[in-house]
Amino acid sequence: MKLKNLIVTMITILPLLSWADITITEANGSFEGSGHARTHDFPVEAQIFTIHVSDADTSGNRAVSVEVSVNDLHTGNAMRDAHMRMSVLDRKKHPLITFESNVKLPELQAGTVFLPGKLQVNGISKSYTLELNLKQSAGKWNATGSFVIIPTDFDLPLVGMGPMKVLDQVNLDLDVRF
Image (cartoon, rainbow, N blue to C red):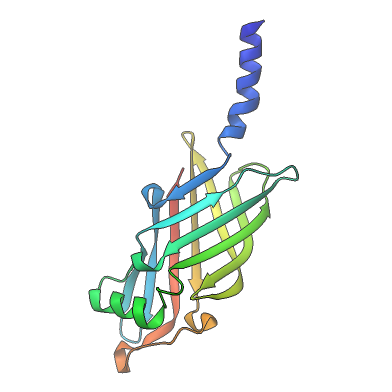
């Protein structure tokens, strides 16, 4: 009887634990992409980020939050990094770029998940929907997604001159395992 109870408990509880209160960081994958200038593209990498998915409440709703440290955004050029952090993004007033969503997601399933929420950049919040593709392999989950950020939507200046002028689009890709 004890063995039967143990098996029933494992079958019932273990799947719930696999999609319980989760924190995903840069140790689990990457959040990077490209910024664009008139003559070239340049890398944009969030070297430190945190994604937190809460436990589901009684209705199956979960809070999903993403935080990216402005100090840990890198573009492959130290001068561009310093200019971005001090002149474009006000890292002292707004040290984080954030995304917040509340979504009905009682359990994790392979496929496409849409996370409507609020993206905040430099203190300005806008409605934004993240689209993630979830796959499972060998007991691990993989979440991927591609996102476009338009700097002027957040009142960010397009700096530079001539061929070095930054264009109004940043493409980002998320690829994490948990």
